[in-house]
Image (cartoon, rainbow, N blue to C red; front, top):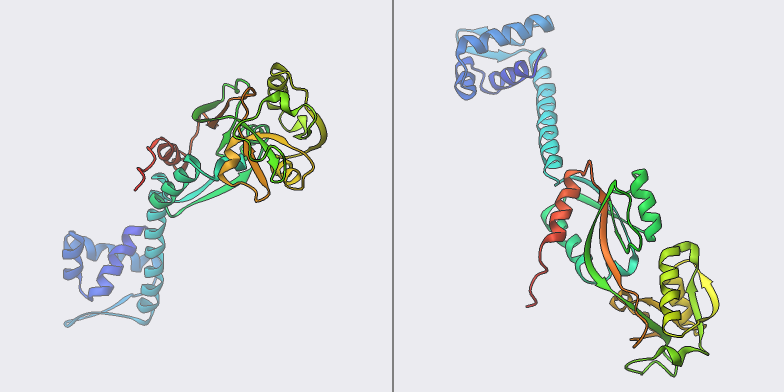
Length: 298
C-alpha cells in the first residue's frame, strides 16, 4: 500500500465518484479505478458499493476513510514540519551567554528579531562562563555562545566579534567614590576588593590583575566568589568594591554605583562562538539575525 492509494481513495470517498476524483487529481478515470481496485484487493474488503447511481462507501469503507484522513493529515503535518525545520523556523537553539551581555544591546535585540521571524524556534539560554561555554560547544551541549575570549580558540570553532566592552569600578552606593565622575587606580590602594575566583576564568583573571599592576594598583582582596553576579551582591552589601564588566550597567543593582576608571582598562570583546561544521538551519538563521543592523531609534 502506498500513499497514492490513500490519496486516490480519499478523493473518491469524498466525491462518491471516480470521475470527479479524477478531475481533482488530474489523473485519468481508468487509473483512479485501478488504484481503488488494487487497494481493495490488498485489504481483502470492498470499500465501495457500486450501482448505476454511483459509488457509496461500505461500512468498512467509512471506517477506512476516517483512518485515511488521519494518516494523510499526519503526513501533511510531517511535511510542513520538516520544511519549517529546514528553513530554521522550527526546532530548538541552545545558546550560552555571559549574563551581563544579555541585559542590553545587540544580544537581546538579535534574539528578539529571531523570535519575530521564527516564533516556532525555541531559544534556550544557559548562563555560563566563557570556559564553560567553550567546553559545552566541544561536547555538543550548546549550539552557540556569547563569550569574551582572551585566548585563541580551537580550530573547530569559529568566532565573530560583536561588541567591545571594558571594565568599570563597582562601589556600594554609600561609598566615598559613588558620586565621582572618574577614579584613578592610586585612590583604591586601601579599599577592600571583591574578586571572582581565578579558576572561573584564569585568562581573564590574569589579564585583570595585570592591568591593575600596570596602573600601580595591588587590589586588597577580602573575598573571592564564583561569579560576577555574586561579586555585585557583595558590593551591594558593602563588603568591598570590584572591577566588573561595564555591560553590567544594563541592569545596575539598586545599591551599586558604577564609576569609570581613568587608568585601568581590560578590553572585553563580546563574541559569538559556534562550531565551524554542522550548523543547524536554526543557528544559521540566528547568525543572520546577529548580522542585521540594530533598528533606528524612533
